[in-house]
Image (cartoon, rainbow, N blue to C red; front, side, top):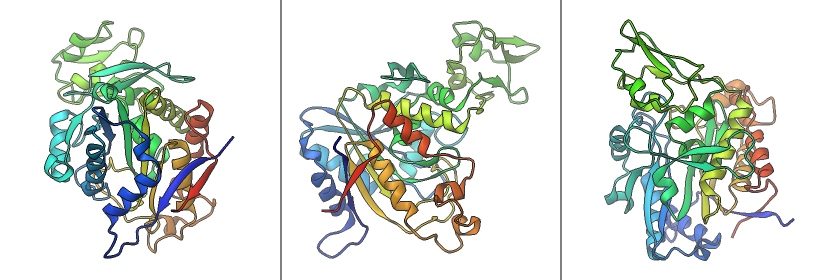
Length: 368
């Protein structure tokens, strides 16, 4: 089998070629123009950044992608789904406020931002997963599934559970509705934090299975009736309904891969990894530590598995930044991500992505 092609350019810039121009050129060289964008809705899957975190991608890079799509006749929009945890992106209004605060607005990016799973994170499509072993029907944000074409623009960095976050993580976890995120993170079913519950009954009203019960002014969830759909999480006004967050890391990675498969299967897709500001943890944190390695560059491919593999290899070939978590922990495993988060096993995500037919780990790195 022919190796997947992954295209790369470094972060050096000159007066004749700045970084946005280098990204535009890289996309062209990677075959971006072979996609028929004419009059197509194009979802650009992005992470807008949790307020307080400054490692997220600058909106300037998103503008490059949006402008290119428009030049080819497409209709781009930037999109992400609401978060499962409490923070600045748990509902569409807060999420858009966070996006605007971090510079993602039509004036800077040239495209509108749409929160794919709606106001409360409950607007989803059930998408059968091709070759799915852990997920038969992924719960994907509706607006993301309405698109004709999907492009992932990913900040490649470390992650405390998955090992790293790249194309598969941005598409899979990021494309899941709040209920979808619960399915990926949890082996069990949600519970109610009694100290937060006000007994309003919103969880009981939305449940089709009579699982939430109100007793003495507080809700609890009957797990014998609960089917784990997670819709109660989205409607709770006090964030009292909590996911279990008890899934094994390898299984979490398998589910992320299967959710990513659900997002991109059966339609054109293209992927970009920005391996810069490689922070040790996810951009979902409201803070970011210093990068663990120097900036590497930009990678682009039609194969998200090969793209993430090439990006991981590139990071592992770098020396640690002085005083970073990586340097403090020491390089013992020959794997920077495992040195930062020893309980993780990022390769399982890519192995499973390859197994279910999303792409391949063997790649040819092309430096035009």
